[in-house]
Amino acid sequence: MNNSASKEIQVETKSTTNLHTLLDRRTITLMDIHELRQQHYAMITEFSRGHHKEAAKLGEDIIASGKLDDDPLWLGRVHRDMSIAFNRLNMPATAQAHITRAYDLHSYAMTGPHSELHAALRERSATASYVGIYALRDWIGSNRDEAAATQALAMTRQAETDMSLAQQLADRVPLAPALDQYEINMIPRWSMAESLLGDKHRGLVLGSRALWLATQSETGGGEQQMNAKDVLRARTRAVARGMAALAVNASSRVSSHAAQKIALKTL
Image 1 (cartoon, rainbow, N blue to C red):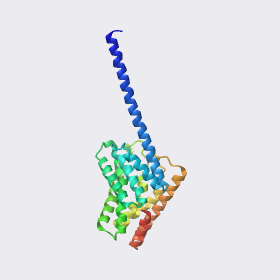
Image 2: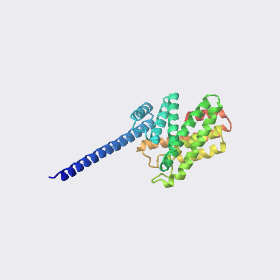
Image 3: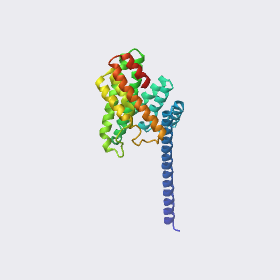
């Protein structure tokens, strides 16, 4: 074999080796993504079943892996879900830290590629909703602190605006569901905030829509698979929140204190 042919074989062998290395790295990356998705869906499922410690632990493991550091949308979701879990565990400072981080990440994601704008708007809407929820709770528990009231209403209205803009873009997104589960989850809270702090008529409109949407909860083909029992549980909670939103609206016209008590139990 001449030197020229030998060199060609060496180059071809080296190229093949490099290609295999790249494919191996890509396979590892895809496996990581699959594993992280499974962990995150498991976290959401644990939370929906009331297993808040287990959900928080799964979230801590995902963040500690560092594999989402370059994905502000997904990392923000995990921080938001952890915030909700820690809130249910009565750890408000930790919950606030995680929701603040989630809001910063999702606001940053708004500056990313236009192709991700629909997703960024949805995620920031959900995150802003929880910032508003925590502020509304602070307002109720702190004898109507003005700063908390201002933040609660501002974040609620930003959440509504972001969701409205996301829905306007939904037609351009392949396989986007007709109804947005984030809206179903958040609209009763928006109603309560408006009824207690803003426009009572707007609160009534939102509460009525919340009750209508409740029966459609978890029918939009969400990312994680839910069994029939989980879907029934989700719909029952959605109906209860919708009814509570209307009760808050009605009570707020007679007794703000009674309306606040109802809201505090269901936010």
